[in-house]
Image (cartoon, rainbow, N blue to C red):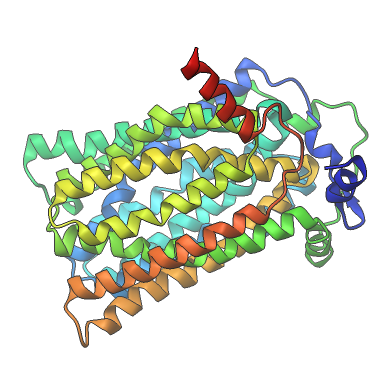
Length: 448
Protein backbone atom coordinates (compact mmCIF):
# COMPACT_ATOMS: atom_id res chain seq x y z
CA UNK A 1 0.00 0.00 0.00
CA UNK A 2 1.38 3.42 -0.98
CA UNK A 3 1.63 6.35 1.44
CA UNK A 4 -1.23 8.17 -0.30
CA UNK A 5 -3.44 5.07 -0.18
CA UNK A 6 -2.54 4.57 3.45
CA UNK A 7 -3.47 8.15 4.31
CA UNK A 8 -6.74 7.78 2.43
CA UNK A 9 -7.58 4.55 4.29
CA UNK A 10 -6.98 6.25 7.63
CA UNK A 11 -9.13 9.24 6.74
CA UNK A 12 -12.52 8.89 8.41
CA UNK A 13 -14.90 11.36 6.85
CA UNK A 14 -14.10 14.70 8.43
CA UNK A 15 -12.73 13.06 11.59
CA UNK A 16 -9.19 11.80 12.09
CA UNK A 17 -8.57 9.07 14.66
CA UNK A 18 -4.84 9.45 14.95
CA UNK A 19 -5.36 10.08 18.64
CA UNK A 20 -6.45 6.46 19.05
CA UNK A 21 -2.80 5.64 19.57
CA UNK A 22 -2.48 8.30 22.26
CA UNK A 23 -1.76 7.18 25.80
CA UNK A 24 -3.38 9.27 28.53
CA UNK A 25 -0.61 8.21 30.87
CA UNK A 26 1.76 5.40 31.72
CA UNK A 27 0.17 1.97 32.10
CA UNK A 28 1.27 1.11 35.63
CA UNK A 29 1.37 -2.02 37.75
CA UNK A 30 -1.52 -0.65 39.81
CA UNK A 31 -3.58 -0.33 36.62
CA UNK A 32 -2.82 -3.94 35.76
CA UNK A 33 -3.81 -5.18 39.20
CA UNK A 34 -7.11 -3.27 39.08
CA UNK A 35 -8.03 -4.54 35.61
CA UNK A 36 -7.12 -8.14 36.26
CA UNK A 37 -8.70 -8.14 39.72
CA UNK A 38 -11.99 -6.86 38.34
CA UNK A 39 -11.84 -9.34 35.43
CA UNK A 40 -11.36 -12.37 37.61
CA UNK A 41 -13.93 -11.22 40.19
CA UNK A 42 -16.63 -10.54 37.60
CA UNK A 43 -16.04 -13.83 35.80
CA UNK A 44 -16.12 -15.79 39.07
CA UNK A 45 -19.38 -14.10 39.98
CA UNK A 46 -20.77 -14.84 36.53
CA UNK A 47 -19.54 -18.43 36.53
CA UNK A 48 -21.17 -19.14 39.88
CA UNK A 49 -24.65 -18.64 38.43
CA UNK A 50 -24.99 -17.87 34.73
CA UNK A 51 -24.17 -21.32 33.26
CA UNK A 52 -27.10 -22.79 35.19
CA UNK A 53 -29.81 -20.20 34.52
CA UNK A 54 -30.93 -22.08 31.40
CA UNK A 55 -30.94 -25.35 33.32
CA UNK A 56 -33.20 -23.87 36.02
CA UNK A 57 -35.53 -22.55 33.32
CA UNK A 58 -35.67 -25.90 31.52
CA UNK A 59 -36.41 -27.77 34.75
CA UNK A 60 -39.26 -25.33 35.39
CA UNK A 61 -40.71 -26.28 31.98
CA UNK A 62 -39.30 -23.60 29.66
CA UNK A 63 -39.95 -24.14 25.94
CA UNK A 64 -37.44 -23.34 23.20
CA UNK A 65 -39.28 -20.04 22.69
CA UNK A 66 -38.96 -19.03 26.35
CA UNK A 67 -35.30 -20.04 26.38
CA UNK A 68 -34.87 -17.90 23.27
CA UNK A 69 -36.46 -14.95 25.10
CA UNK A 70 -34.15 -15.39 28.10
CA UNK A 71 -31.09 -15.32 25.85
CA UNK A 72 -32.48 -12.55 23.66
CA UNK A 73 -33.34 -10.25 26.59
CA UNK A 74 -29.87 -10.83 28.03
CA UNK A 75 -28.32 -9.89 24.68
CA UNK A 76 -30.45 -6.78 24.24
CA UNK A 77 -30.50 -5.24 27.71
CA UNK A 78 -26.82 -5.89 28.42
CA UNK A 79 -26.12 -3.37 25.64
CA UNK A 80 -29.25 -1.33 24.85
CA UNK A 81 -28.49 1.52 27.25
CA UNK A 82 -24.76 1.49 26.54
CA UNK A 83 -24.79 4.65 24.36
CA UNK A 84 -26.38 6.64 27.18
CA UNK A 85 -24.04 5.29 29.86
CA UNK A 86 -21.07 5.64 27.53
CA UNK A 87 -21.90 9.22 26.60
CA UNK A 88 -22.34 10.20 30.26
CA UNK A 89 -18.99 8.58 31.00
CA UNK A 90 -17.35 10.64 28.22
CA UNK A 91 -19.07 13.79 29.45
CA UNK A 92 -17.85 13.31 33.02
CA UNK A 93 -14.44 12.02 31.86
CA UNK A 94 -14.90 9.27 34.45
CA UNK A 95 -14.80 5.51 33.93
CA UNK A 96 -14.10 4.03 37.36
CA UNK A 97 -17.40 4.94 39.16
CA UNK A 98 -19.46 3.25 36.41
CA UNK A 99 -17.30 0.13 36.56
CA UNK A 100 -17.40 -0.09 40.37
CA UNK A 101 -21.16 0.37 40.74
CA UNK A 102 -21.94 -2.09 37.94
CA UNK A 103 -19.52 -4.72 39.25
CA UNK A 104 -21.00 -4.68 42.75
CA UNK A 105 -24.70 -4.63 41.80
CA UNK A 106 -25.27 -6.57 38.60
CA UNK A 107 -25.72 -10.04 40.13
CA UNK A 108 -28.03 -8.96 42.97
CA UNK A 109 -31.29 -9.61 40.99
CA UNK A 110 -30.25 -13.27 40.64
CA UNK A 111 -31.28 -13.68 44.31
CA UNK A 112 -34.90 -13.92 43.12
CA UNK A 113 -34.11 -17.16 41.24
CA UNK A 114 -34.52 -18.89 44.60
CA UNK A 115 -38.26 -18.09 44.72
CA UNK A 116 -39.21 -18.18 41.04
CA UNK A 117 -41.81 -20.81 40.08
CA UNK A 118 -42.44 -20.03 36.40
CA UNK A 119 -39.73 -19.87 33.70
CA UNK A 120 -41.26 -16.67 32.26
CA UNK A 121 -40.26 -14.78 35.43
CA UNK A 122 -36.62 -15.62 34.77
CA UNK A 123 -36.85 -13.30 31.76
CA UNK A 124 -37.52 -10.37 34.14
CA UNK A 125 -34.67 -11.36 36.44
CA UNK A 126 -32.25 -11.65 33.53
CA UNK A 127 -33.42 -8.26 32.25
CA UNK A 128 -32.55 -6.55 35.56
CA UNK A 129 -29.17 -8.30 35.72
CA UNK A 130 -28.18 -7.14 32.25
CA UNK A 131 -29.29 -3.53 32.68
CA UNK A 132 -26.93 -3.29 35.65
CA UNK A 133 -24.21 -4.95 33.58
CA UNK A 134 -24.79 -2.38 30.86
CA UNK A 135 -23.98 0.42 33.27
CA UNK A 136 -20.30 -0.56 33.31
CA UNK A 137 -19.77 -2.02 29.83
CA UNK A 138 -18.82 1.09 27.81
CA UNK A 139 -16.70 2.49 30.65
CA UNK A 140 -14.83 -0.82 30.87
CA UNK A 141 -13.96 -0.77 27.17
CA UNK A 142 -13.10 2.94 27.33
CA UNK A 143 -10.79 2.45 30.31
CA UNK A 144 -8.79 -0.19 28.45
CA UNK A 145 -8.63 2.01 25.35
CA UNK A 146 -7.18 4.87 27.40
CA UNK A 147 -4.70 2.69 29.29
CA UNK A 148 -3.34 0.18 26.77
CA UNK A 149 -0.29 1.25 24.70
CA UNK A 150 -0.99 0.89 20.98
CA UNK A 151 1.80 -1.60 20.24
CA UNK A 152 0.69 -4.22 22.80
CA UNK A 153 -3.10 -3.80 22.84
CA UNK A 154 -3.88 -7.38 21.88
CA UNK A 155 -1.37 -8.70 24.42
CA UNK A 156 -2.95 -6.76 27.28
CA UNK A 157 -6.46 -7.53 26.05
CA UNK A 158 -5.43 -11.18 26.05
CA UNK A 159 -4.37 -10.93 29.67
CA UNK A 160 -7.76 -9.49 30.61
CA UNK A 161 -9.44 -12.40 28.79
CA UNK A 162 -7.04 -14.83 30.47
CA UNK A 163 -7.99 -13.73 33.98
CA UNK A 164 -11.65 -13.69 32.99
CA UNK A 165 -11.50 -17.26 31.69
CA UNK A 166 -9.53 -18.39 34.73
CA UNK A 167 -12.18 -16.91 37.01
CA UNK A 168 -14.97 -18.63 35.07
CA UNK A 169 -13.17 -21.94 35.37
CA UNK A 170 -12.72 -21.57 39.14
CA UNK A 171 -16.37 -20.60 39.64
CA UNK A 172 -17.79 -23.42 37.54
CA UNK A 173 -15.43 -25.86 39.19
CA UNK A 174 -16.99 -24.88 42.53
CA UNK A 175 -20.66 -24.83 41.55
CA UNK A 176 -20.74 -27.62 39.03
CA UNK A 177 -18.13 -30.05 40.29
CA UNK A 178 -17.40 -29.60 44.00
CA UNK A 179 -21.03 -29.05 45.03
CA UNK A 180 -22.23 -31.88 42.80
CA UNK A 181 -19.68 -34.32 44.17
CA UNK A 182 -20.55 -33.26 47.72
CA UNK A 183 -24.34 -33.28 47.38
CA UNK A 184 -25.05 -35.31 44.23
CA UNK A 185 -26.81 -33.96 41.13
CA UNK A 186 -28.39 -31.17 43.14
CA UNK A 187 -31.38 -29.02 42.42
CA UNK A 188 -29.29 -25.91 41.71
CA UNK A 189 -32.24 -23.58 42.34
CA UNK A 190 -32.48 -24.81 45.94
CA UNK A 191 -28.90 -23.75 46.69
CA UNK A 192 -28.72 -20.67 44.45
CA UNK A 193 -28.35 -18.15 47.30
CA UNK A 194 -24.99 -19.61 48.33
CA UNK A 195 -23.09 -18.94 45.08
CA UNK A 196 -24.86 -15.59 44.56
CA UNK A 197 -23.77 -14.26 47.98
CA UNK A 198 -20.24 -15.58 47.47
CA UNK A 199 -20.14 -13.89 44.08
CA UNK A 200 -21.23 -10.52 45.44
CA UNK A 201 -18.56 -10.62 48.16
CA UNK A 202 -15.89 -11.53 45.60
CA UNK A 203 -17.04 -8.67 43.35
CA UNK A 204 -16.65 -6.18 46.19
CA UNK A 205 -13.14 -7.46 46.90
CA UNK A 206 -12.34 -7.40 43.18
CA UNK A 207 -12.92 -3.67 42.74
CA UNK A 208 -10.95 -2.57 45.83
CA UNK A 209 -7.73 -2.02 43.77
CA UNK A 210 -9.52 0.76 41.88
CA UNK A 211 -8.99 2.90 44.97
CA UNK A 212 -5.31 3.02 44.08
CA UNK A 213 -5.57 4.24 40.49
CA UNK A 214 -6.42 7.56 38.90
CA UNK A 215 -8.72 8.19 35.95
CA UNK A 216 -6.56 8.02 32.76
CA UNK A 217 -8.04 11.23 31.34
CA UNK A 218 -7.14 13.03 34.59
CA UNK A 219 -3.47 12.07 34.20
CA UNK A 220 -2.91 14.13 31.06
CA UNK A 221 -2.09 17.83 31.13
CA UNK A 222 -4.14 18.48 28.03
CA UNK A 223 -6.91 21.05 28.26
CA UNK A 224 -10.21 19.33 28.98
CA UNK A 225 -12.53 19.66 26.00
CA UNK A 226 -16.23 19.86 26.69
CA UNK A 227 -18.13 16.88 25.30
CA UNK A 228 -21.53 17.64 23.81
CA UNK A 229 -24.18 15.42 25.38
CA UNK A 230 -26.46 15.63 22.31
CA UNK A 231 -26.93 11.98 21.37
CA UNK A 232 -27.97 12.68 17.76
CA UNK A 233 -24.83 14.70 17.08
CA UNK A 234 -22.76 12.01 18.80
CA UNK A 235 -24.28 9.37 16.53
CA UNK A 236 -23.45 11.40 13.43
CA UNK A 237 -19.86 11.83 14.57
CA UNK A 238 -19.44 8.13 15.32
CA UNK A 239 -20.65 7.08 11.89
CA UNK A 240 -18.24 9.43 10.13
CA UNK A 241 -15.59 6.95 11.26
CA UNK A 242 -15.61 4.74 8.16
CA UNK A 243 -13.46 1.94 9.56
CA UNK A 244 -15.71 1.74 12.61
CA UNK A 245 -18.91 1.79 10.55
CA UNK A 246 -17.79 -1.01 8.26
CA UNK A 247 -16.66 -3.16 11.16
CA UNK A 248 -19.99 -2.53 12.91
CA UNK A 249 -22.05 -3.51 9.85
CA UNK A 250 -20.13 -6.74 9.30
CA UNK A 251 -20.29 -7.56 13.02
CA UNK A 252 -24.07 -7.08 13.02
CA UNK A 253 -24.56 -9.40 10.06
CA UNK A 254 -22.47 -12.06 11.73
CA UNK A 255 -24.06 -11.46 15.16
CA UNK A 256 -27.52 -12.32 13.86
CA UNK A 257 -26.50 -15.88 13.06
CA UNK A 258 -23.88 -16.16 15.77
CA UNK A 259 -26.62 -15.79 18.39
CA UNK A 260 -29.12 -17.86 16.40
CA UNK A 261 -27.83 -21.08 17.97
CA UNK A 262 -27.16 -19.86 21.52
CA UNK A 263 -30.41 -21.09 23.15
CA UNK A 264 -30.16 -24.32 21.13
CA UNK A 265 -26.91 -25.48 22.69
CA UNK A 266 -28.57 -25.69 26.13
CA UNK A 267 -31.56 -27.56 24.66
CA UNK A 268 -29.24 -30.10 23.04
CA UNK A 269 -27.28 -30.55 26.28
CA UNK A 270 -30.23 -30.86 28.67
CA UNK A 271 -33.31 -32.01 26.72
CA UNK A 272 -31.63 -34.25 24.13
CA UNK A 273 -28.49 -35.57 25.85
CA UNK A 274 -29.91 -35.29 29.40
CA UNK A 275 -26.78 -33.60 30.74
CA UNK A 276 -26.40 -33.25 34.49
CA UNK A 277 -25.15 -30.20 36.37
CA UNK A 278 -21.73 -31.83 36.63
CA UNK A 279 -21.54 -32.50 32.89
CA UNK A 280 -22.58 -28.94 32.00
CA UNK A 281 -19.96 -27.66 34.42
CA UNK A 282 -17.30 -29.77 32.71
CA UNK A 283 -18.27 -28.25 29.34
CA UNK A 284 -17.84 -24.76 30.79
CA UNK A 285 -14.51 -25.67 32.38
CA UNK A 286 -13.19 -27.15 29.13
CA UNK A 287 -13.95 -23.94 27.26
CA UNK A 288 -12.39 -21.78 29.95
CA UNK A 289 -9.30 -23.97 30.37
CA UNK A 290 -8.65 -24.05 26.63
CA UNK A 291 -8.91 -20.27 26.52
CA UNK A 292 -6.43 -19.96 29.38
CA UNK A 293 -3.97 -22.20 27.53
CA UNK A 294 -4.09 -20.58 24.10
CA UNK A 295 -5.25 -16.97 24.38
CA UNK A 296 -1.86 -15.49 25.26
CA UNK A 297 -0.28 -16.92 22.14
CA UNK A 298 -3.13 -15.62 19.97
CA UNK A 299 -2.83 -12.16 21.54
CA UNK A 300 0.91 -11.94 20.93
CA UNK A 301 0.39 -13.12 17.36
CA UNK A 302 -2.17 -10.37 16.82
CA UNK A 303 0.31 -7.67 17.85
CA UNK A 304 2.86 -9.16 15.43
CA UNK A 305 0.90 -9.87 12.22
CA UNK A 306 -2.31 -7.83 12.64
CA UNK A 307 -5.95 -8.35 13.51
CA UNK A 308 -7.97 -9.10 10.37
CA UNK A 309 -6.80 -12.60 9.44
CA UNK A 310 -7.10 -13.77 13.03
CA UNK A 311 -10.60 -12.29 13.35
CA UNK A 312 -11.62 -14.11 10.17
CA UNK A 313 -10.05 -17.36 11.37
CA UNK A 314 -11.93 -17.17 14.67
CA UNK A 315 -15.28 -16.38 13.02
CA UNK A 316 -14.76 -19.10 10.40
CA UNK A 317 -14.07 -21.70 13.08
CA UNK A 318 -17.24 -20.74 14.95
CA UNK A 319 -19.16 -22.35 12.08
CA UNK A 320 -17.71 -25.69 13.16
CA UNK A 321 -19.36 -25.48 16.58
CA UNK A 322 -23.05 -25.98 15.62
CA UNK A 323 -21.97 -28.41 12.89
CA UNK A 324 -20.25 -30.73 15.35
CA UNK A 325 -23.17 -30.46 17.79
CA UNK A 326 -25.28 -32.25 15.18
CA UNK A 327 -23.23 -35.43 15.44
CA UNK A 328 -23.03 -35.52 19.23
CA UNK A 329 -25.03 -38.46 20.61
CA UNK A 330 -23.27 -38.68 23.98
CA UNK A 331 -22.23 -35.92 26.35
CA UNK A 332 -18.56 -36.88 26.03
CA UNK A 333 -18.82 -36.06 22.34
CA UNK A 334 -19.49 -32.47 23.37
CA UNK A 335 -16.35 -32.52 25.49
CA UNK A 336 -14.35 -33.13 22.32
CA UNK A 337 -16.33 -30.49 20.43
CA UNK A 338 -15.58 -27.86 23.06
CA UNK A 339 -11.86 -28.72 23.13
CA UNK A 340 -11.53 -28.57 19.34
CA UNK A 341 -13.53 -25.40 18.72
CA UNK A 342 -12.30 -23.46 21.76
CA UNK A 343 -8.69 -24.20 20.78
CA UNK A 344 -9.28 -22.70 17.34
CA UNK A 345 -11.43 -19.64 18.05
CA UNK A 346 -9.26 -18.51 20.96
CA UNK A 347 -6.61 -17.28 18.51
CA UNK A 348 -8.89 -14.51 17.28
CA UNK A 349 -10.78 -13.47 20.41
CA UNK A 350 -8.37 -10.70 21.39
CA UNK A 351 -7.97 -9.48 17.81
CA UNK A 352 -11.63 -8.46 17.60
CA UNK A 353 -11.37 -6.31 20.74
CA UNK A 354 -7.92 -4.97 19.79
CA UNK A 355 -9.20 -3.88 16.37
CA UNK A 356 -11.89 -1.82 18.08
CA UNK A 357 -9.27 -0.23 20.32
CA UNK A 358 -7.22 0.59 17.20
CA UNK A 359 -10.02 2.48 15.46
CA UNK A 360 -11.78 4.20 18.39
CA UNK A 361 -10.59 7.63 19.69
CA UNK A 362 -9.80 7.24 23.43
CA UNK A 363 -11.53 10.46 24.55
CA UNK A 364 -14.83 9.30 23.01
CA UNK A 365 -14.43 5.62 23.80
CA UNK A 366 -17.54 5.44 25.98
CA UNK A 367 -19.76 6.68 23.17
CA UNK A 368 -18.16 4.44 20.54
CA UNK A 369 -18.28 1.30 22.68
CA UNK A 370 -21.83 2.19 23.70
CA UNK A 371 -23.10 2.41 20.13
CA UNK A 372 -21.21 -0.68 19.03
CA UNK A 373 -22.51 -2.91 21.82
CA UNK A 374 -26.06 -1.53 21.58
CA UNK A 375 -26.44 -2.09 17.84
CA UNK A 376 -24.81 -5.53 17.83
CA UNK A 377 -26.89 -6.36 20.92
CA UNK A 378 -30.09 -5.72 18.95
CA UNK A 379 -28.96 -8.25 16.36
CA UNK A 380 -28.06 -10.72 19.12
CA UNK A 381 -31.57 -10.19 20.50
CA UNK A 382 -33.26 -10.89 17.16
CA UNK A 383 -31.02 -13.86 16.40
CA UNK A 384 -31.67 -15.60 19.72
CA UNK A 385 -35.42 -15.20 19.32
CA UNK A 386 -35.36 -16.46 15.74
CA UNK A 387 -33.39 -19.55 16.72
CA UNK A 388 -35.64 -20.47 19.62
CA UNK A 389 -38.91 -19.98 17.75
CA UNK A 390 -37.67 -21.68 14.59
CA UNK A 391 -36.97 -24.86 16.56
CA UNK A 392 -40.35 -24.57 18.25
CA UNK A 393 -42.08 -24.15 14.88
CA UNK A 394 -40.24 -27.08 13.27
CA UNK A 395 -41.44 -29.34 16.08
CA UNK A 396 -44.88 -29.28 14.43
CA UNK A 397 -43.41 -31.62 11.80
CA UNK A 398 -40.22 -33.03 13.31
CA UNK A 399 -38.91 -34.33 16.63
CA UNK A 400 -36.90 -32.00 18.86
CA UNK A 401 -33.62 -33.66 17.85
CA UNK A 402 -34.45 -33.36 14.14
CA UNK A 403 -35.52 -29.73 14.53
CA UNK A 404 -32.26 -28.88 16.26
CA UNK A 405 -30.30 -30.61 13.49
CA UNK A 406 -32.03 -28.54 10.79
CA UNK A 407 -31.36 -25.25 12.57
CA UNK A 408 -27.75 -26.20 13.38
CA UNK A 409 -27.16 -26.84 9.66
CA UNK A 410 -28.62 -23.43 8.80
CA UNK A 411 -26.50 -21.69 11.44
CA UNK A 412 -23.28 -23.44 10.41
CA UNK A 413 -23.83 -22.58 6.74
CA UNK A 414 -24.51 -18.90 7.35
CA UNK A 415 -21.72 -18.51 9.92
CA UNK A 416 -19.33 -20.03 7.38
CA UNK A 417 -20.37 -17.72 4.53
CA UNK A 418 -20.60 -14.49 6.55
CA UNK A 419 -17.18 -15.03 8.16
CA UNK A 420 -15.56 -14.10 4.81
CA UNK A 421 -16.92 -10.57 5.18
CA UNK A 422 -14.25 -9.90 7.81
CA UNK A 423 -11.57 -10.31 5.16
CA UNK A 424 -12.85 -7.12 3.50
CA UNK A 425 -11.75 -5.06 6.53
CA UNK A 426 -8.51 -3.07 6.40
CA UNK A 427 -5.89 -2.85 9.09
CA UNK A 428 -5.68 0.58 10.71
CA UNK A 429 -1.92 0.46 11.16
CA UNK A 430 1.13 -1.48 10.04
CA UNK A 431 2.43 -4.44 12.01
CA UNK A 432 6.00 -5.78 12.38
CA UNK A 433 5.37 -8.95 10.35
CA UNK A 434 3.03 -10.19 7.65
CA UNK A 435 1.30 -13.56 7.64
CA UNK A 436 3.70 -14.60 4.87
CA UNK A 437 6.68 -13.69 7.05
CA UNK A 438 5.30 -15.93 9.76
CA UNK A 439 4.96 -18.90 7.39
CA UNK A 440 8.50 -18.37 6.08
CA UNK A 441 9.82 -18.25 9.64
CA UNK A 442 8.14 -21.56 10.47
CA UNK A 443 9.53 -23.21 7.33
CA UNK A 444 13.02 -21.91 8.09
CA UNK A 445 12.88 -23.34 11.62
CA UNK A 446 11.80 -26.73 10.28
CA UNK A 447 14.70 -26.80 7.82
CA UNK A 448 17.09 -25.71 10.56
